[in-house]
Length: 518
Image (cartoon, rainbow, N blue to C red; front, side):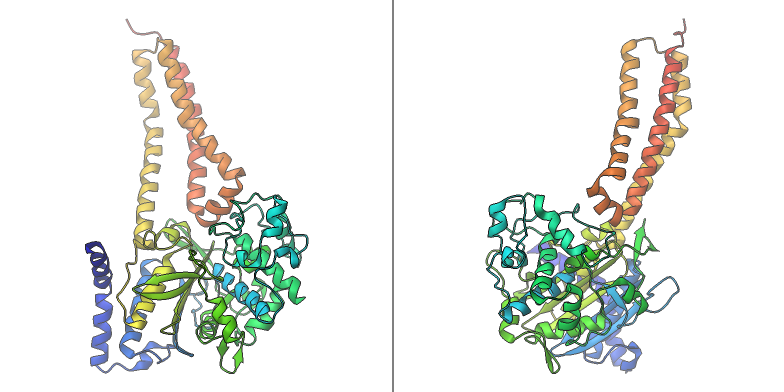
């Protein structure tokens, strides 16, 4: 109990200046239009606190640009853009498109549930009913695996990166990705316990394509974007860039650097929809209002209710993570690609939802939310979304975790310390072997011991690291993409250690040839 209270006090302390500022602003009669393009659906005091909190967290994490939307009931209550969309300094607005990462899975799940609602897909039918050639390594498991198991990620499909076809841009990329599953060994029998895997949603995207007779991209545009009036949402990076998409950034030792990453069309159903915060507000409205947005409906009330059912003993539903916070049921999904992150969170009972997107990400974000907060990909924006939802609903503020700024400081300190050790070892190398030469190195055992130590430290370890950097597909898929500063630092340090080892062996040979002084 004490630990929980301390965490909440710490969060409340961090927000005290913003709460006080919002209250003083209200007492002073601050006009609501001071929030710029924010709407007035929130209480002015709360809107002021949200605005100050978002600015502070964006500044402390060095996020270049961020967009935020809050939905209450059937309308957008607050929307605002912060910071810059690209290196030119163009301002982020609520209409600026961002890559939303794995939040895309909820769109794919909605597409499948639409087809199920129309009687075109049976959730408990075998995948092979819709994709006859679908295979994994086990023929029996291939026939047993169902659509529902893909939705809830209980199929046993592992999280794979060899199936990613990063350079494929043609219409057949998705099918080729699913066909690559033919040799995959499952993580257990079907059905299996939950196991997060993009392969589930790639396969679901192909089912949507096969059943509807439309490319996945076209189906999403016609059946979701159009009825929800999502005019700044895209399934093509080229098209999104023409309509003002934000530039993505990756942090290098805490500093954001703009970079355009490949758009992975082969995994579009699992993580590559691009949408603005305003459009995601429309999407939230439909999720919290039985599929309705204005006069349009994307699914029947019964279909939306089925999409929001939580399977027993499983925290992942139909494209959603289901959470329990302070006695309230919440739906969440986070999204992260190498240079974008987003988080969506809503309370279906209070009918309040939050979406936040940012144009920067690196590996440290995965650890910035509270420990154990999520088995998914909890990140910097997960904590921000939770705080904003708490502010909008008047609930206790959650623990925000260590935060990206602290993690970056620790990361940079460790890198600096290790770099200093490497440089120091170079500087002291000649002096160390000069002293060794003066006293002599006559014993063969001492010579052998030193040679082995030099070989392990300066050759074996660096060569193993270089092999990972150059040839490991896991390393390339994770560290090189999501933590490029660490990858390149390891690459440079490994090369320096190999050079140091060669010099050290030469000096050791020279010292061994010297006679011990009489």
